Image (cartoon, rainbow, N blue to C red):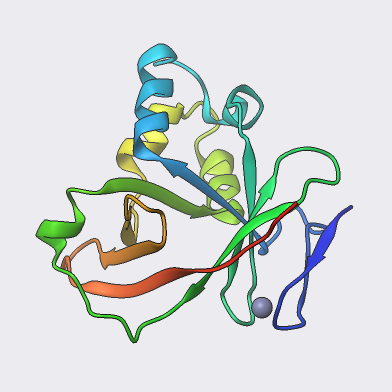
Amino acid sequence: MAGIKCRCGNILSNVDCPSPNIIQIFSSKEVNNFINKNPEMLLIDFETAFDRKYKYWYCDVCERVYEVQNIPLGRVRRSYIINNDLNKISFDIASKLQQIYVFFSTELYEYEEKNVSGTVKDFFQTHPQKHLFYISEDEKYIYAFNNLTKEQGFIYTLDYIYTE
Ligand SMILES: [Zn+2]
């Protein structure tokens, strides 16, 4: 059991499994490399096979996202917050940036339950994603676009960097 206290005061916990406070974030680059090396890997084996430096917590009250070292008693490294006051950018410009995949843990579990023999490749290539996400080179901004209309939905910005 573990938890962290959000800057808004909400307690994030992973007591429920899958937890609504845990999200999964991958860069499309690392996912594509993984799939090329392991085209038949089942999704159920993905979490243990995929070497992750960080894990991600999501606050269901203020929607902040925390990046945490993926080790016992790992420290928070960065947090992101929704900030829609920024200028929007076009999908054409954003889609030249690094794409990232963002899923709730619950989404992965539901997919695994329905597709016991589903591969990692199946999941990333066929699972319908509501939003497409792109991260700026300096990793300060994350742009989310509606996958159907390609209209900008929301923007996350770097909220806080934690020092050791
Ligand atoms: Zn919060």
